[in-house]
Image (cartoon, rainbow, N blue to C red; front, top):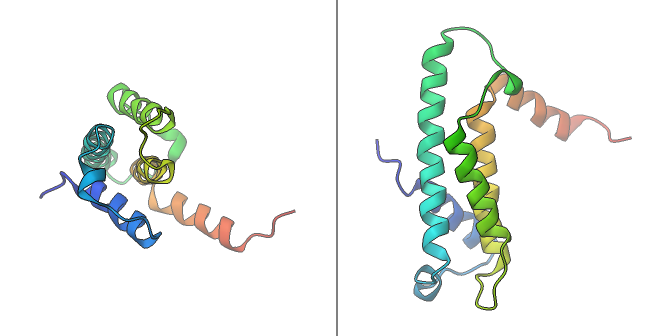
Length: 131
């Protein structure tokens, strides 16, 4: 199963849907490659983690708080946050950089939370009245 590049593809799709164009110039920007390499690495790590978790759980129901994160994934997530939040004079559009972080957060959430927890959170956000 090919995983390398799928997270970057999600970033592309979201940015294109939002009306942000991807050019050769953007993809050759010195800040772009570290972001794309890191998002793809995080995606592969989270896929592996999720497969191990499903294999180890064997019917035991878990929630977000039951799972311990691995130091490597945590370190890479922190590095991604730093890349996204750092500013320079010759910077990539901050909205494009933010999309990398949004995708990573979504992948992280999906890897560490079970389907019941995710469905509960979605239902709560969509259907519960805010006070």
